[in-house]
Image 1: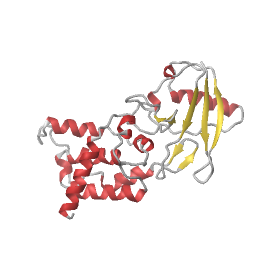
Image 2: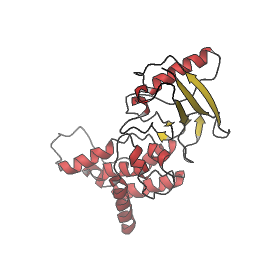
Image 3: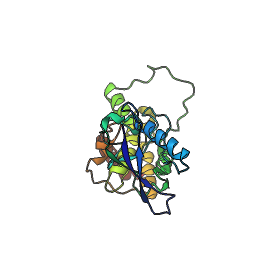
Image 4: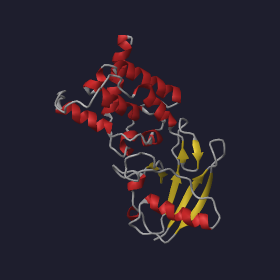
Length: 248
């Protein structure tokens, strides 16, 4: 199997992007997309050429590092799938595949397909925690939580912070990411003590990072590899509005 890769190459955030066409040969349709890039980079290195810089870590769909736009869609556009879970069987032999980094002002390019997503970390630092003294691990039944609330909290907690929602949004908004983090903690008893301060602090950090506003087009939820619901954005708006009314 072979693919033609059209890759956006960029030395750093200050450099202009250029396009490079690279032939990927000797592939198997059982390879993951990142394994294919490893094979390509091995060949480029042997030829004395600069390998394609891309980010990855767990390669199990958990860490959120594999941030690539493939043929115009973050993570390749397959439902509930990260780039590391994407396999070459989804591509035709001889197909041309276009690779780009996340496009957002808040995600400056480090090199080629790697961007700095530290803005998401700063949002988490602003309020994505609880500061109660937990002590030792409590008994699992010591704090009853309604199943419906626990289910909604866990649905939001699966967010891996990859930034695909930002890359897909025409405004480069981080509302789905922030909504997931605020929802996760606001729905659980441990997070309710600081829910007002958290909503205000995380939204302020999001605005300071340069993310755009949300116009609820739904593109973020459509590409989210963990299928986070737009309900999280609605909950964030509600939490933020109530916090503003309380004057926290």
